[in-house]
Amino acid sequence: MSSSDPTWRVFYTRARAEKKCETRLQRQQIDVLVPKKTEIRQWSDRKKEVTVPLFRNYLFARVDEKDRLRTLKTNGIVRCVHFNGEPARLRPETVEQLKTTQNAPDRLSVADLRPPVGETVTITDGPLRGLTGEVQEHRGQTYLLVRVDAIRQAVKVEVPADWVTPDPSAA
Image (tube, rainbow, N blue to C red):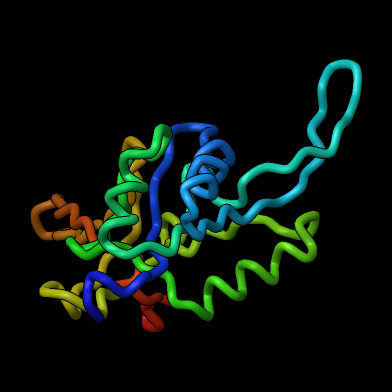
């Protein structure tokens, strides 16, 4: 795929700027998607149904390299999201599924796909493949803890969530 082919990219926005960025990008004729959900918000004197972004601080835009740079210059866009040094891309099927979810925005919520803290997992990808440890969290960072009980110490390892699977022998 050349850099001139438009592809769905993931962009990180300033806090609460998703809808404004969506409007600004649409004005620039850029194909943009900000999936939304509706929820009931409680104030001291009333309840109100409000529409909020499904993924806080994220939006998706179908851009080529030139439009990617224009998007990054848009007020409210912080950066293009990368994983393992590669720009995050959405498959067209995923975009279509997200668009379909907008038919029932009151039934949506976000699920965290990271393994829960305390679960024993095995690394299945990358240079640390085969390593087994316990998922831990410290100061908002999730990592894998490999215990070395013989010396009562442990090694903290940061790995992407998609590199691990639950360890069946720990069940």
